[in-house]
Image (cartoon, rainbow, N blue to C red; front, side, top):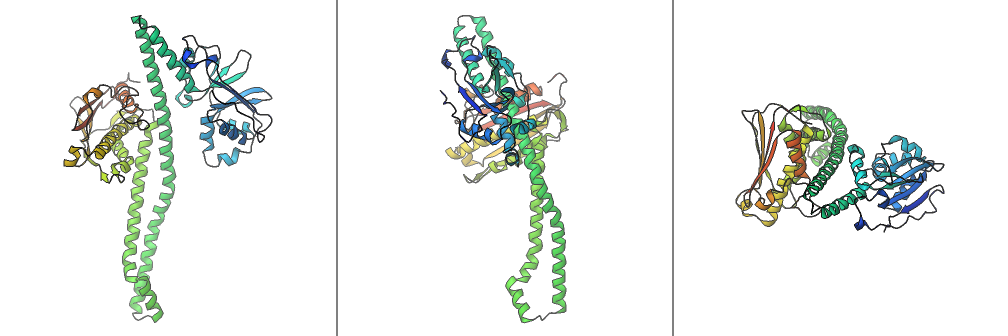
Length: 474
């Protein structure tokens, strides 16, 4: 049971904090269980209170999903923990809103709030909740009580309760074959919906993050690159003046001779242009990385476009460069690219970039594991990932991504594309990457994704998609 929140003297008197927990044993959920049986929170705060009071309440109870806003004891809205700290992480937000009334902050990120009556069944509430837009998928659910009050339920608590109810339902319906089949199909739908919710949230956040980083880096790099041109010109002019002085005054004063010797003028005049030229090469390399980040930030794009598939693969490889050159284990992974002459492909570029990322990360993980166990195939040959593309006669594009790692046991290959299945240690893999990749290739692009692996020899993933999307595909 969660501890109750104790009001602190530093909090404004108009904050009402009540933490309520359900007395129902979570293992005793029934099919008809309602939202009343879930853990719920009733934490209210007047919108005239300063923003710092929100920080205090959230720090006081780490599990608190959100805070209900009131004005003269009347409901106004809700601020979730996730949205609040996301907004407060922006530059200057904390300093700007910490001392101002909460109502000013609330105007900046009001979002759609789902409100459900407390006598709604958990199953029905889950169905309603999963229909929310991805951007508010993880927001707490506002529960309206029979007496007109409001409380909050954590989204994950609802999903957990639904999962328990579903498992219990399956056990009860094992003797009825048809009903059991329907229940399994419903659980599968829940699993896929939950996978999509996680995917949409993760990809939207990652796309925004990558695009933001690229933008922030681009400004100073452009400044440096633009000034380097002038710095090279100015330094060359100064070196020319020094050369003219040396020609006109071959025998300078002793003090000048000493200074020339101390700074090693001959070496300086030779090395300075090379130094500036290397800096110019470095800025061009950074500009190339920024361009790759911008290409990769297409992750949050939902529109189909005509794109160069090779551009997406190369952008992904640049982002994974630090893992390909693994300094921790002292070994590098060689990338072999065999690109065919492909036309631009009609596809969802951000989603395909994600497929490339998932498969390449799996290949790198497999090779790193082989490094640790000193697999014989890597002793004889350097660790490598081979990427091949080709265009078939029936306008299908095939992308092959293979590695020479330890391979995948045949008993596990049939489960590779199942949601939440992973062979990686706890905390390293979620079991969603290949499942999501399969949905993107098959459902979004009408293509095929298969895995061919031989234990001890390596693994190959084959992606096949049409050059033009079928208009019926969503």
